[in-house]
Structure formats: C-alpha cells, structure tokens
Length: 295
Ligand code: NAP
View 1: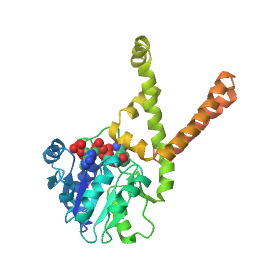
View 2: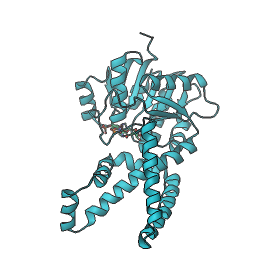
View 3: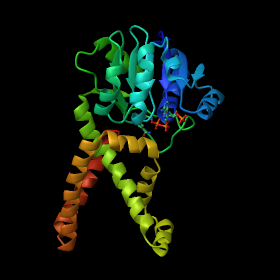
View 4: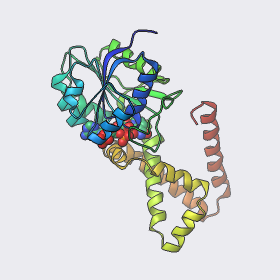
C-alpha cells in the first residue's frame, strides 16, 4: 500500500461530507495515518466515536488543527471565517488547509486572510451529496465518478494543490480546476438555483388550503416528489450557501424568471411549438447527463 498522503488529517465538521471522507480514509488506509474530528457538539463527536470514524475527537478546532499536515473544513460555509480565525495561529509549517464548501469566492474571502505564510490554502468543492446530514449520513462511494472542483489561489503552491487533488482522486473523484468566480456562477445554475426553486415550490404547495394540501401529498406525482427530496436538505447549510453566493444566485434567478415568464406567455397564447421545443431541450440535457455518467 502506498504511504498515506498525510500524517494527521483534521476534519473540522464531520457530517455527510466529512464522515464520507473519514470512512474512505479508514477503508483505504492510504489517505491519512491519523484522523482527527472536530464538531460543534459533543453529541456528534460521541457518534463519531461509536462509528469509529476518527482516532481523536475534540470540540476545539485549534486543538484539532495543531500538528496536522492537512486540515479540511467540512462545516457549513457560514462558520468558516470563525473557524479559520481559530485554527490559523495553530497551523504547523507546511500544513495544507482545504475545504469542501459549496461556495468558493466567499470561502477564499473568509479563510485566506487567516492562513499564515508558512501554511497553504487549497479551496475545493466535491460535487456530490445527498439530502441527508450528520455523521451517520456519509458513505464510502459518495464521491465515486463525481467531480471535485479545485479553485487554487493565484500564486499558491502547486505541490499543495497536487496533494489535495490526489486526496480526492483516492476518494474516487474526477478533478477539475477553475477560478472561484467561474465556480460560483456555474454552481449557481446547476445546484443553488434548483435548490431555491425546490424550497420555494414546496412552500407554495404547503401554503395551499387544507384540501389541496392533502391532494399534494396523496397524489404527489414524481415531479413534485423529486422537488421534496431536494427540499429535505439541511437548512443551515443552504442558508449559508444562498447568503454566500448571493450575486451569482440572484443573477441566475433573474435569468430563470425571464425564461419562466416566456414559458408562461407561451402557455397563455397556446404556443405549442415553443412549449414542445423547451421540453425537448430538457430531454436532451437529461440524455447528455446520462451519457456523461453524471445522472
Ligand atoms: P452536515 O452533514 O450538516 O455536517 C456539518 C458538520 O459541521 C457537523 O459535524 C457540524 O457539527 C459541523 N459544524 C457546524 N457548525 C460548526 C462550527 N461552527 N464549528 C465546527 N463544526 C461545525 O453538512 P455537510 O452536508 O457535510 O456539509 C458540509 C460542507 O460541505 C458545507 O460547507 C457544504 O456547503 C459542503 N457540501 C455539502 C454538500 C451536500 O450535498 N450536503 C455537497 C458538497 C459540499 P454538529 O453536528 O456538532 O453541529
């Protein structure tokens, strides 16, 4: 077996994403020699110990980071600034700080100022998830065949970037590198906007009078069911994503609302060709996703 990539990997936050990384590191043995877990609550750390997901657990992020050669932030992005401020002064020379946050410009804004010159920061985002959260939700195949996007800082250390890329490769992921602004715009369309629509449509349905609400539940067609699955996601995580990718999300929402208005107009004026064309386009997109193995 190849040497572990890291001696001591500290996971700051160990829910769906952090515990999946921990499970993979445990199963493979070539990612980290020692795993340290930090969470906000003792209940989560107790569960981490029951599941044997880490060698050490601590409620103190600074203690988790001390002596680690890799620190991975796996908490909701709204907590990153305070976490980075707490761990920054305790980072060992050469330590790599990385993250899994769903937004990248805000993470760079919040974390980079706290990383000392003797350490490295490599922002990353695994594009894989489910609607479940907490340390029980993780599993070893979560990242398999899915992309992890790296958004390295200009002038960052290429060998630190390569080590994080290798970590994700060992988790089964495909690697793509891009700048943070491009990441945030892309994810606004393919992830953040669909979640916003799902939360909204479930709210709309829930606002309907009692009689219709029963109909929604009893006759929920697959379209609505798919929205409810997405809408079951963690409220804190998504609050933080929306507030930390505000500009790109609002821009994509404005574009979407224009397109939705155009569809409404086509429905009003019975523009059958327009409607058919849009549905056909949706089908094509679905087919190409299946062909790319990303469905
Ligand atoms: P999760 O299952 O809700 O777990 C969050 C973890 O962070 C928990 O261990 C929680 O501890 C801890 N935490 C929360 N606030 C903290 C704080 N202030 N200090 C230290 N730890 C704190 O979340 P997740 O789904 O794994 O998401 C984690 C990150 O991954 C987020 O930044 C998210 O944007 C990103 N991400 C998520 C997905 C997805 O689909 N879920 C996909 C890709 C990336 P307690 O349990 O003690 O509260």
